[in-house]
Image (cartoon, rainbow, N blue to C red; front, side):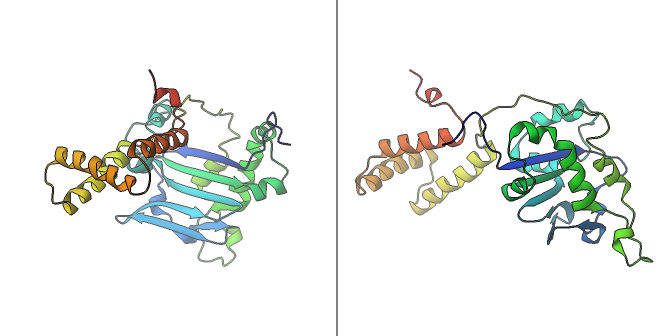
Length: 250
């Protein structure tokens, strides 16, 4: 029987955000890393480094431009105030180093409960930043990569949990609603495709005609459009953590 008072952890994520006037991962190559991961993926956008990914399962690390990710994907702008409270000027690139510990690894190290996981954050961070993954300064005169010196920037990252700093806690919305880019770019794209296929150039006419044809389409399948919309709406509300009563507020 499932014990709801002692839930098991299936994944732990640890991350560290930082900005620097003297260092950027744009200048880092695959050769500068020493890792136990079987694979390194590096990513470029318009010729600029956007990040790295190490590993595929068990332990996974991502190092990426968090400022770009916020602007182009997640829209987590609440992080701006947190960064500014730590001295961010609002313009510098903020890089995130993020480690994921998946179920198989958590089972191996016996870390499946919430309180022990929180207590072991420092040890987990040290294990992955000191042994599993390191950024080094290549020495062409030494073929033994294990002797290459740790990059000063990575030394700072290694010490993220040992310098007396406390995690910054911020209440964030519990909903997972899609961002406007998704709704108004992708959504409009589908509507425009419908308009083109039906030879309609007026958006208001297109919306009315779309609803009319959708009613016919679902009636041929033995359903009503209203019932389908209601069912899908409830599914999306659950996925986005939106209380049902907010959709059907009398």
